[in-house]
Image (tube, rainbow, N blue to C red):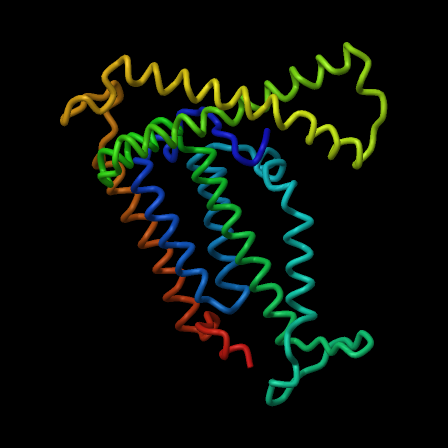
Length: 272
């Protein structure tokens, strides 16, 4: 399972309107952006994990497999944020560790954890949207609910559908070269050279596929009529509104409790 995979299931999150789900996730991410304490960001991440496991019914092991490719980058950003924090600007720094010329204070650790957990939170909600949203339903929802142009919407969907096809075509080219005995050496440099050799046939194949799709859409009268009909009926249901209200109330309650006890910090200067 890869990071950008849609997992086909019949769950609560899979049935939520894609546009409504997208707007809700964007609002949650926007809120987390202005929070500068690790406790609130951890709370948001934990609620996201609960939604993935309970409402989307995705196993925890599969979720971590989807996040695994970005784990090292997440750890590197956290450590870099801790080291790069300017301790000299603190009024009364509590130095925890000294590494050469770098001073690591309690505030720098909190800052690094906040940045790391914020990215972790973004990662969880990105997986939540991608894994529970059918791409076709998403494009139709953008067109029907958010009034996106069908030309842009279906063009984006066609491009999205090309991604796995290009991956399969890359494997076909690679196997054809192996049959001819031209793929003997291994290593990073050989992979770069191989990608350069494969780029031309991949580009030619992508152009041919795009031409075929364009001809097929024109032959079927795409955009010939002002009003369109759609095979799938994507609309906002009462269950979607109920989910939106419950989730918003849950997150607002979490923020209210943490703010009441002085745990939630808003703004970068609150760390100093």
